[in-house]
Image (cartoon, rainbow, N blue to C red; front, side, top):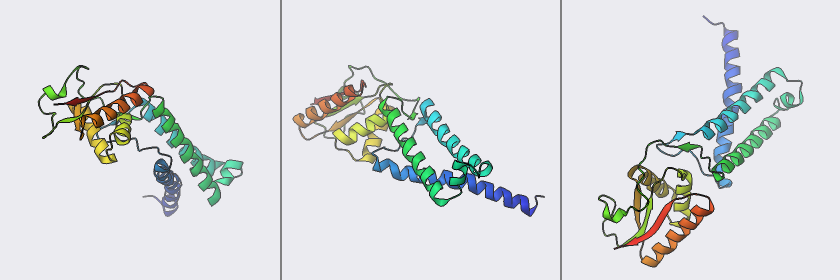
Length: 218
């Protein structure tokens, strides 16, 4: 049976490890919307190689801070971590740095999450001709086809930005595209559908993605 001193030591060590990690991820979650850096982990996704690298670096950073705190109390960094101001500055710098790194990775085409499952239809597929895609009362709109190259986070962002969907609706639409192979989104007029399709296609090409989006009508 462990002694009281051992239990006390384990409790202190757990606090030193867990407290900064929890504080880091809490501040990171707050910083994301302020920096327009959306959350990466969406429903039905797995972490990619880039995600594992970034998240591992975050945990190693926290472990390094704990080691410096414990074994280098007389040093510059270790000593600073023994003060409230030092801890706040370290967490703030880590939050900013890793948030910027995450945003940069996504812009470079290295998403932190992805999914192995999904349906990709031929580029010339017409969803109007396939069963199960046409919403009731559909007259004009856009069709978007799934592919295995365009990051899911980009699809969500462009639907929110260009198609006028809110965040939850954009995520649901992205998952439907990925799971079913595509989606038909209705618009009030043919002109509105053409405008949205052209803007999505333009932004996709500007970001070196080959997302297929076109205006369709009955």
